[in-house]
Image (cartoon, rainbow, N blue to C red):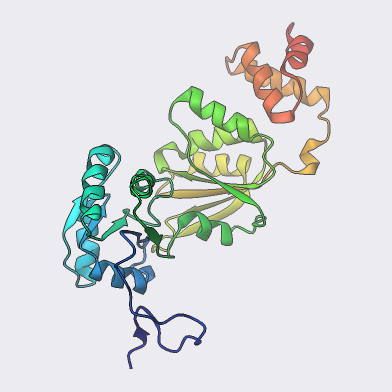
Length: 298
C-alpha cells in the first residue's frame, strides 16, 4: 500500500475519513498552493485538481509550472483582479452545466485577501456548492512562529496605497486589542513601518519574509527597531507582519511633556498642527481638540 491513500496518509487513525473523493456535490474547490516550498502542496488538493474539469488560476503560467511539476495536465482559465467579474460569470455558467472547477492563487489559500472571494460569492449566489482544502496560509504560519498572543487575532491584509484610506484603516485599529496581521511588499515596507509606528506607538512586531523559501527570515523586534533595521538594510521578499494589540500598559495616561515633545517633532517634520493633534490623539487616546488647544501656540 502506498503511503498516501485517497489523498491522506494510509496509517492515519480510523477516525479520519478515507473515502474516495466525490466531485458530484461540490462545484468549486478552493485549493491552496505552496507559499514557497513545493513539498507543502496538500496531497488532497492534488487529487481534487486531477478529478476537476478545469482550474481557475491567478496566473496560468505559474500554475501551469506547478501542475507540470506534479505531472498534472488540466485546462487552465485565467481569473485575476482585472477580469474577475466577466470571467466569474463564465466560470459560474460552466459550473451550472455540471462541471467542477478548482480555484487557485499564486501562493497560499485562495479567496483570502484575494479576488477569488468574489467568485465564491458568485457561486453561492447561483446555488452552487463550494468547499475548501486545508493547506498553506502565510498569515497563520507567521502568527504561529511570532511568539505574540494568538488567542485572539485579526487579519488586515495589505494596507491601501491611497493615503486617506490607509490612514482611516490604521486609525480604526489604534485601540485594537487583538494581535494584528498585515501583508506587505518589500518596496512599501519602510513606509508601512513608519505609518504603523505613527498610529500604534512602539509595539512588539514579528516580521517574517519569504516563508518556507530558502531565505526565510524572521525578525523579532519592535516597530522602532524594525524601522532602524530596514533603514540600513534593503527589504527583500514578501513580508508578513504580526503586531501585538493595544495593551493595558499603553492605556496609562501619557505625560504632557511626552505629548509636547512628540507634537514639536511632528511640526519640525513640516506637519501642520491639526495633523499633529490628530496623530497624537489616535496614538494615545486623548481628545484631538484637547491636544490642539494645549499646544497650538508652539
